[in-house]
Length: 187
Image (cartoon, rainbow, N blue to C red; front, side, top):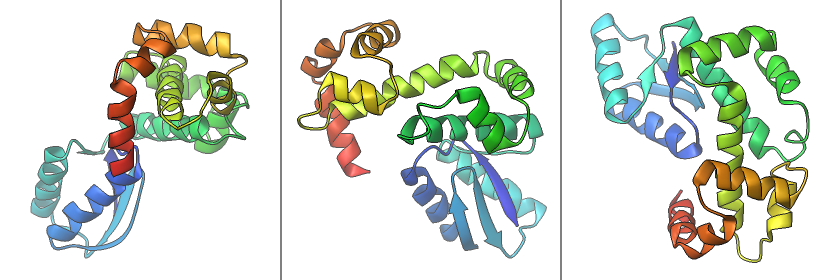
């Protein structure tokens, strides 16, 4: 049986879901971002138990198709931001291709469920990616801008300040970058 799971965004999430399901006594055949395949098929009581265990780890079983679409959209945006060849392509075309639905439909559902636009979510993910890049030794702002798909370091700087409330220099000197680097090293 395939379980659709919300809030999975990284390999740490995949490992956590695999551990939770294994500890619950299921044979975990596969876990990827947004879903897990388990056997045997769980009973209704077991589904409730799984839902509780996942909630305890900040995940959620998905039953609503619109919520599943929003989760798939988030995963596609994250893929778009982290794939160096794709981040330069048009986001709406990439999402339509990955999800197999029109961008207008995806956008309407996303905004209704999330209370924000896909574009805003995309910007937030790009800034998070830049934070990670800037923690890499020797990484320049121009290199981070290029890798993250920004047209220029100046554009990156403006957007970074708008989202975080600080300049990239302030971020680097604040100690937040060292904390982020340590947490990334643990993943």
